Image (cartoon, rainbow, N blue to C red):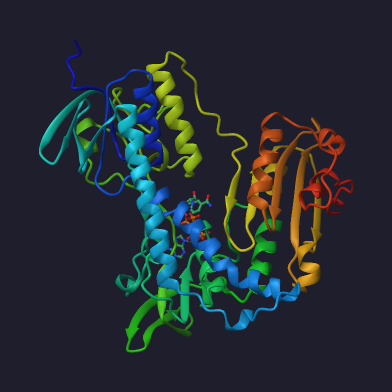
Length: 454
Ligand code: NDP
């Protein structure tokens, strides 16, 4: 008989925590999990899922314009979005998903404890005054939006509130140039809001391939988003008709709503990490070794709280690997290479592997780039362009970077990610027969290397 109440206690019922708990229980471990908000965490309740539903919801105006251009007898101009109705429907879906998550845990035999967990020591968690012991503890508390210390910051919203707005503003300022900022700029712009995106850097999406950054920016601007680069906010002033955003240099931008999407920080405050001697890095993320073990050997951490690759599928994979390692006698470590990702901007981005800039640092490369008008836009008369780009390692002929900006790019990238994980070469891409007429066939018919810069 174990000296502990459970074999495993998981703090945090988001994607990573729930997956770890379920998998461990399926291998026979006695598992408990605690959560103080809604089950499902950021991805399901405050991130990927509601965001994607709003991306779908916002896109219909463009679809109606296209339908009209294709001969449908409708008046896209007069179509109006009932925003509160969209939000209410989204909320119904989130409630359904919360129940699904609850049932997944209960059916797997995981004890669900509703409340905030904090460490008492390396084997004890306190939830609402009750102390529970476990042989091992996993911290999967995720992250939370962070905002800089600017005068008037108390007036702004973050992505958390943006997903629950009661009404759409007429004008909106979105601060930041990362994933969340460009995704929400796309959503609100497509809903008819006049959006200004303020970025302190010269361009959006730092770290992405330069062609991708430029291309998306142009497409966002074509759709009417006003991107102000190299722009720093000095203060935000509440006025009767909304807010005045004061910019460095003296300009003032009047608006109805200000949203900050300036990054997220690991949720490591107030969970008793100091009681178990858990070490953090300079960004307040929990430091773990390749086995997800913290500086306290009985305490593990995974997902956004470790600030490695902050994506839901990564947290899911980490949870699976940890459960297999601890409770299924099949230890393995996580492979962080070739993780595909998408940005659900409008148009979206799908990416696998390295940017051209990062690839060039590793050795000699060949680059293939194609820009074209999506077929659907011929009849609809849109001026949008898609971008496809391959980066090939010259020595091995392996495709080490693949980037798509345009409709369905996330779906396209997911398929090609399998090929790249398997080490596909450019020659193998070239011998793959295209599917015609698709956009994705472009990726297997790229023959012309881009000329090297002189
Ligand atoms: P990011 O780290 O991606 O971007 C933060 C942005 O805010 C950058 O443009 C940064 O500018 C800017 N910024 C930071 N500090 C300041 C400041 N003090 N003043 C002005 N601007 C500032 O964060 P996000 O919040 O967009 O997203 C967080 C994470 O969530 C992402 O990294 C991603 O891992 C995940 N995510 C993934 C999604 C997906 O897979 N589709 C969707 C949404 C989120 P600069 O470039 O100059 O540093």
